[in-house]
Image (cartoon, rainbow, N blue to C red; front, side, top):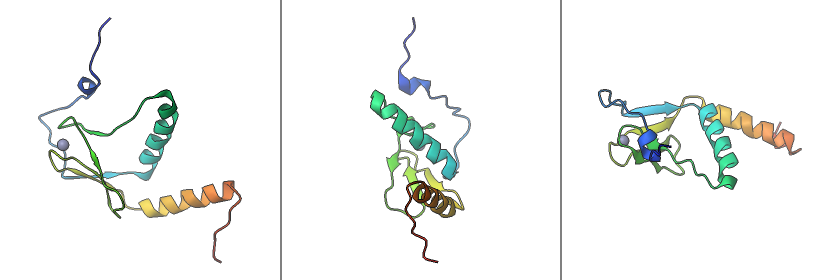
Length: 105
Ligand SMILES: [Zn+2]
């Protein structure tokens, strides 16, 4: 048996620096949140780390663009273009599923 610290499973390539800003697709976040909700009842948390710095990211709440930032290297993760449209679509689907109609037409 071999035990490896979770932080050491981060595979980094120190020869490559990340861009200062990284766009995140809405679908990726949705899948990530789904995985979180499946693992949380099993006492496992999924916390985003900066691969370069191996540091937990800071969550940026109530911002129109930024999702996370690395407190060490300053890289920010932002919502990809079209994020709001996809969010609206998902909310509409959810409302439809729950029988709530909020369309104003
Ligand atoms: Zn970093």
